[in-house]
Length: 276
Image (cartoon, rainbow, N blue to C red; front, side, top):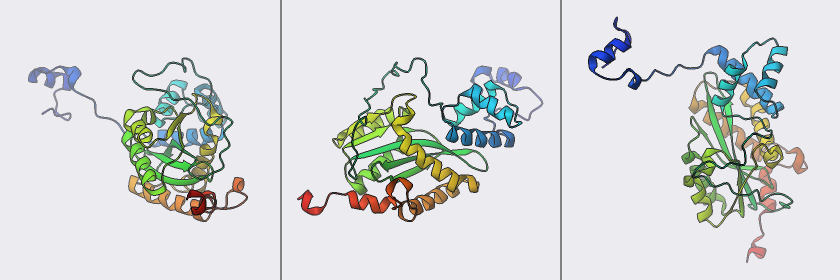
């Protein structure tokens, strides 16, 4: 009905149609090439130094010859969905309608497969834009059980990979997540609790709570994502699926005595005689 290329302004067209100018939404603009390059560097710095906030990131970029305003940098960081791992103001206040579950892994010896699963989301840069990667990881073996690459942070994506993991690998004792909106939504928590699992959540700004999964993100980004930029969401899905297949079955893990995560996972499963 409205023609943005018409000689008449949008305000005038809206007035002639008898509608409010405020109801006419602006078309979203894609990120510029400069912003995409900046977002990639921000993601690299965040992965290396997760404690860096907007000011420190700005100062670090300035030292590298990249000049960007702190407000613009904060906008990009918010768009990427990353947050400095440091104490934040008001972190003890729960969002309305969302229940925060206590952190259950402190001083817990995790020695069995399917004892604890962890779910975390990270931002994956592409040649044009970015996607969100969410994975279910067995903590004892570091094996990536299921994962999802999506363009949004909706709870349905976390729910789907959780249901897939439960169907393929059984039921864990504890499921640990961060306090992301996709993990605090009833759509996700109901799936976990319905299976009799205990739900655990990282403290806000507590980097130690999910450091083992952050190490997996570092591996996938430096060993695959940063080496080549995928030009589509489907290409990113295929590339990351290929990486995790190699990571689980072929890549020796330094914290697992140079054994692959899949080998450790199978060894740590309860034996049939014990299960009986």
